[in-house]
Length: 376
Image (cartoon, rainbow, N blue to C red):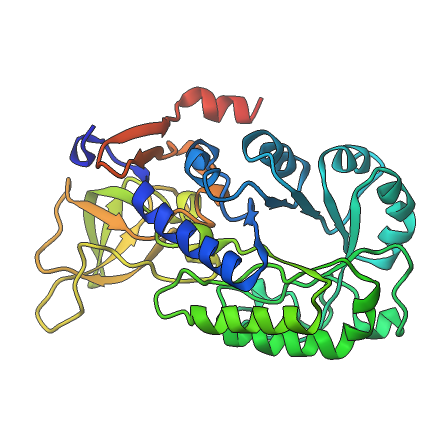
């Protein structure tokens, strides 16, 4: 099936782009001597995991659903972090996980013995209180954060029985940001390292982004391992695995104008199908757009939901947009397909995979039953 034959809207994932990212991640693993695992919170498109399994089977999960999907579709080490476990969930977590991280000392005290008895390696999330993230919504190191134990709360003593420490303080960040956080981590928690088996540097390492200093990252990781050679080092980036591996292809349905603002209404929704565009917020690149210049038509894009704020803009084009024009919203795989919803009952875009030879196939199509069953 050729791309131009596929009716919009649809998400499309490119195998060749996936392999490019996976090969770079594998190189960093090998040269730095670390384990880089996939975070389901950023990508759960399991029908594409045939490719992922060729490179890595280890993963991190933050819920029972993610954990079960990882067990079934990847099957490697299962690292779990959840802000809180309950008597109703802890048993299944322990039956499926290989590593389990606690968010607080009270959770460790409640379930630590049970974890060790189950043969699962327990860890504790710590908060080095080093903030390098500008968007507050995605910054776990803000004052008053609910995530992780501070050095002050530990009081210079790590409870006996904890195998690892975990921090997550990055978001699509650089290796220089990691170095800054790592310095704070070592300064505040280095006294614990002798009693540990592993450390987890969390997510946010956007090593597959163009311009990312991969060699510096490898050097930072090697340096840490040289200082603490007995520690296994784990990274669990989300975006890096599927960065720029897929797009959302839409069509213009109508063009309306109000008080000088032209809006092209598309057959997809920012609120339903690209929620981070409104939450961050950010404006995605559109392949068919051009830089703004005098005389060029400028449009905002409006989603096809009834939410007033379901729009993003503005983009310039080298001609007037008309119904039927296709627009490609770039980089809509990571943290997009996992966040979609069916608000307004709007039809969900299909999922398409484009193989390295250019042949495309449906991974999943959606219909009325998907909407109805979700409310069942």
